[in-house]
Image (cartoon, rainbow, N blue to C red; front, side, top):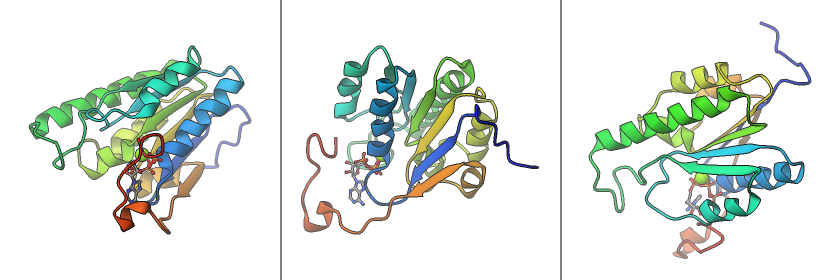
Length: 182
Ligand code: ATP
Ligand code: MG
């Protein structure tokens, strides 16, 4: 099938890889788009238990950018005490919310932050993401982030950037910092 290169078709953009900067890149797009008075929806998978600066920072970009957190936090590590079914339910809920926003045609950009991590943790499947892409409103740009983008999604995407870790302060034992990491 020939690629649809229509000028009005939204792009599928993936930020993946082990290096830092995937969510940061997606949030950077929010600022750029808000400057054009475009509508952006961010749906965060996984990130339910920690408080990240963007959860409040994005309110400063209202009414152009909105953010919804649908995850239940870390799965199986750190502070996680939840039964796995709750994470599965939360990921499914995030998927439903994401699918509705992407299909609605109300947004210029829909960002699904950490969605690939949901696949890695087997909370959702690559087929779920492919169907979301398939049902996305024609003009809406989709941005997907997280380590481990599945090959099927990379194949479908228009833009894929893999963040490569060259150095990270964590290697020297420097802990996550406010405003930089969360
Ligand atoms: P950021 O949100 O800072 O753009 P990211 O989205 O690329 O990071 P995630 O895998 O979502 O990376 O990780 C989120 C958290 O883990 C952040 O606090 C980030 O600083 C930290 N982190 C990201 N990459 C690394 C790494 N290579 N080594 C250690 N910590 C990392
Ligand atoms: Mg991230």
